[in-house]
Length: 222
Ligand code: ADP
Image 1 (spheres, rainbow, N blue to C red):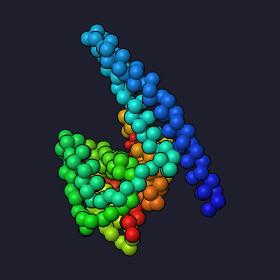
Image 2: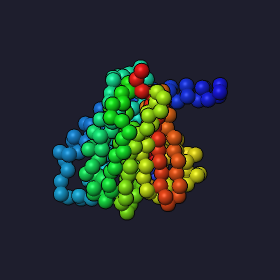
Image 3: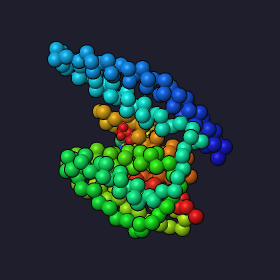
């Protein structure tokens, strides 16, 4: 247990460092992007496109690293978690339709209140649903369901995708571990960190070529 504690302490220091560095890099990056837009011409369009897509990639990595900032900076608010999830689904609806994916909701209750930082919890479900979409290149159904047990709410994101091989499940949550060409490998690490800061847990269950279910459990407000 001691080793585990040390590990999580190290992670939080690394997280703070990451957030600090991410902040510092973001300002010059914004300036570079701005001037780049100004000098972009039709000549050598493909080079400009490459630079632009790499700049966007750096920006995506920085946004995810920034979420790792100190737990004390989290702004906890009473939040209806079902409404929050519906908001996230609305946000991702176009992306789902474009990928031939149907988003299904199966809520047990409609009045579940948790204490959370709304933006951070939204980020978690955006990450989970985007991963589910990526896992189904030929389309399919994503079902999001909730279950209330004791003083906890479990929210499951279930896909019918490729599944996660066992050797990869072990590595999930490691920074920069990705199997995607355009992945950052930070989405789940950041999600684990956010849920940990909210006194919750994330569990993964997956079957190859059948699909993956990722369940987030969070404490309900008393
Ligand atoms: P990224 O999506 O940028 O790769 P993540 O940390 O979100 O970073 O995910 C890490 C890896 O976990 C992914 O590259 C993928 O291999 C695997 N993974 C995550 N979610 C799923 C899922 N729903 N189905 C299959 N594989 C998944």
